[in-house]
Image (tube, rainbow, N blue to C red; front, side, top):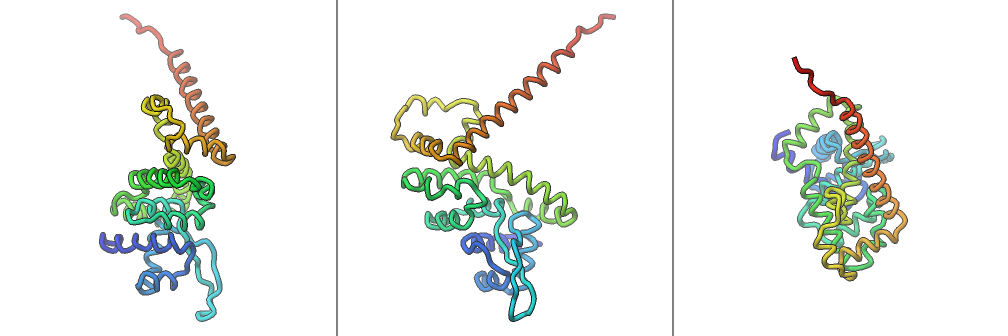
Length: 247
């Protein structure tokens, strides 16, 4: 698939994102493309880990089962990097994909405060733009071609990447990613100490939500275990330090 065809293929993602679930012919009408062309695009996006067939439904006209397609979390992340998404688009996707991402699952709660909502949207856009699955078309082409050869490897790789990206995206949306990366609260936050600051409001709102609080606690536990493992390895390594023998 050449560059222009890949660009056209990726345009199918925002359509599917706002539709939620759709079959091949339905997407073909929305994209104004032939059904056969859309099928090829869906297969490419499936191999790239961006969409998946979630179920089949009977097609009375063709008297056969047809696949119903939806975005994966990586596909959702790719769409969230799109510049022209509106606030209502975020609301719509939050309803559709609330089972795919914790932030969307708790969207009704998090978006009650307009300022906090806008802050989360901006944080999410920034993260998605920086960390979207395919920052350039050659990445998508290379990965899709590779995974066609090894479906098991794709599934294993996809699961690992999804877990990583979900946690990263959630931390980024809550503006906690830098804190876990740097290991300390940025000084400008400490100096302001303004309880009405949108960031402080967001954090206070997050820890009042059981699901978000559990996620944050799990991240702290993960970091504690990681640092313990590093310390254990450090001790093991230094115990093997012996003086060099002189000739």
